[in-house]
Image (cartoon, rainbow, N blue to C red; front, side, top):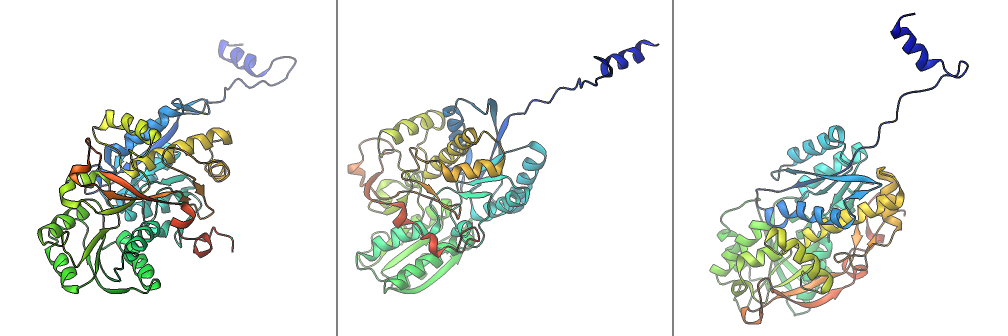
Length: 405
């Protein structure tokens, strides 16, 4: 018998003819988290590199491993284009073995990733998507909306402004899903409160000149001009409003439905002092927020926005759920996230509802006068804390097919 035949015989004929397998089971690979962000466009200030840093801090806080396996982070720039975001998600889920995708700022790109996540049955932690469509008619079992949605933001600011006696409203909205949702929800709340919508205008994303939109708002005679946009668009709109005297008007009040602390930093306290904003997070709220923010600051050189805190919280709780579930399977981890208590420096009194929306406390903040600010990034004073059950749309009103009627 040849040596090769003898080797084969030795491998398969042992112990009186009993067949023994010599193949070894392949060890499971790393747990992979993918961060799809706006790295170069108008939303990079509340996404970008900061999103990756926030995710890495969460990984540090679980010891760099889950289920005994190392955790890896992948990053990509979606360039605020849904087709690019969807393509990255497909490649990551199908070829790279990514377990969950995080951030994906902008509703259009997030909707594209949500569709892929649902199709591939993989997790999407929509920690930077605001439109309420994610927990309404376009919800799906694999997409979890972690940050406050457009309904919560609109409700907090619209109701607080209505209490001042301002009844007539005009909206300047970004012309895409996020802006449309905010405009729709502002209108519903104003009308339900006995107020009146005097009109609205919509602008393309990335608009450079807001003069005509601000003039339309001023000429409407509305008591309140509401901005339903974000990022650089919102910053440019407020700068134009200051130039046209709208921010200091005695007859008209301006509110912005989505302001990040990086926007306040860019505009300066002198420009927008007194502006009331809604936020899920403020770095200087208490010891827990300050401790985490300082870690972030050491890497980024800026304080985190609420969406960076949301990126951290969503990743942290997902990894904790995976460990508790003793499984990396999407269905097992998501089921555990619905069962386990969720509480961290971002998610206060949090509940992950059956429509896959995380409800939590929402803050009403007022931008300080420069004289009130004692140190860098000391930009807000807390006006009110709105409990999650009052801030978010009641689940009984949800149109999400996951909700049992």
